[in-house]
Image (cartoon, rainbow over the protein chains, first blue to last red):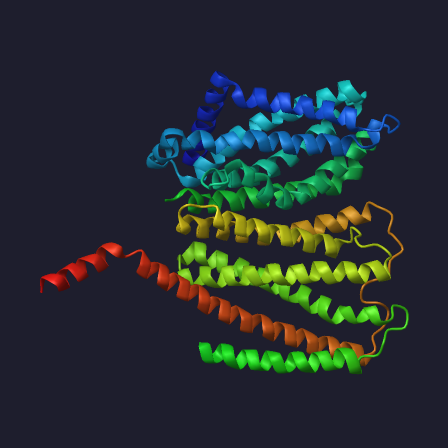
Length: 225
Length: 236
């Protein structure tokens, strides 16, 4: 257990260090998120009150921006067969997955914070009152998203289709995250109390637990040659 | 095994004829929906078989990841192909009925939504399989999706039901209708039996085909050994 935590922390540290040096994933993800917000603002009928559909816009942006960043997670390891090197180290397959998952989650959480700020700025949303609830719902949604996302980005990276395959596999599986996440976000943004989204939060937490455990277990079969 | 497939297909064909006789000549015409209600006898069994197929895919995928037995993978892909066929049948017959009964081709009804998502997961299953250079990895990737999908399906089901409850309920008739005429129930059960038998007959044939394909592949990708033996023969 101790080894598992230490090993996954090492992998996460490695990934975040690479990101800190290159900043390519964060820059592309954040630029993309801002662009989606701009596209929404032009595509929307000006008579629609943005606060009524902000939950949907926020989650669509988080999902698409996250998907864009995920593509890099394992294509990076394909370069010069870095993955083979990682598999040769005494790090367990589960810890390798969990480390990658933590790094992806950290990057997605940063992106999600920026998404909220951009939407608050562009669409005059007031986040202040519901900040804690929004943070909780969004974090839980991101955990579930990255649990499945990390597993299938490893799958997609070793196929011919690569990143094209990722959204096709991932989006149908992520419907529960969209339903519970966007639903709760919408209610919180229009000023409903946190107690009203308790059911959504429990469902998101259950989804997270199930898929973090399951994906950690089956990851080994994905990377083995 | 071929005998089993033949026996099953004869049984399936006989039951199907019986089911069709019941559907068109025996089952009474439903009062409110009229003749279109008869599509129910194809729609419901197709849905049942589609979910059965997905269950088979999930179990065999799990078994394949565990035991690495190619036979399990052959059953999984056979069931997945049939699953796509039957899910497509559900998604075609559903809207035809829905247009006449609900007045709309599509509504975001939980079961309908779940079936659509199931169909999309099946499609992804084949895309993953076909997009890998190394067929062994393709099998494993597809099996991973089979397992993850099977765990996700109940959660998707819960979430789409939740999604509905967040919206005002449209004034729809429940697909079953209020009727429970014994003739209707009887016809449905015969039809369910016919579809299930057909599914297993097709599964056996498709499995036999997949095994044959595996054997051909094994023979084809053994050029070095065969060339060595033929060379030995020439020397002798």
